[in-house]
Length: 194
Image (cartoon, rainbow, N blue to C red; front, side, top):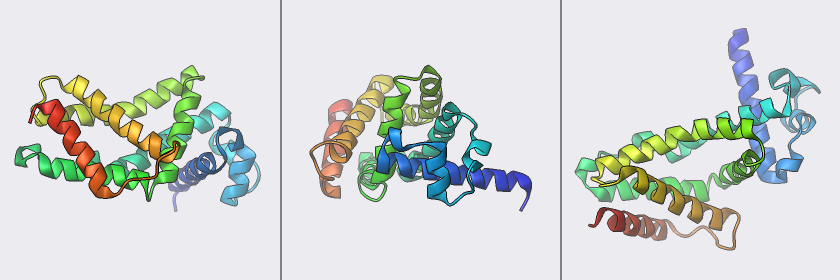
């Protein structure tokens, strides 16, 4: 294994462990020492990867974006030209995965989002990594024939975030896939006038 591959895998281990700690313990439970212990690394290893708390948080935000991109798979959305049913199904499946199998990842995202409201440097990193998702949703809304893709991408994001927050951190449990599918269908129908 090359030094660069080793460094990359160590950084991924540190960031993945930080995400797990955020979901389990919250922001106060995320320390360099806690990451070392939870990852089974020698003391000081996390500091070698991310010297400051800011660096650790930014590393974690970037890893979160990589992992959420795989969970949400927006880049694999079906061709909207084939109709909205396939898009509805894909979006519903992505949301349902975030609410069920990847609930901890979603919870970690909310911890980081709240922390980003207090740290301008983290906010810049968080917004930059999130731009990829906004751009993909805007392109999807455009392809679906939206008369206002930016506004509709925001509406879709707000609805999805509201559903995820309510089910991950709020009083609701994750709904069945069909209920998520129906919600996406209704939202798109309202936005697109279909």
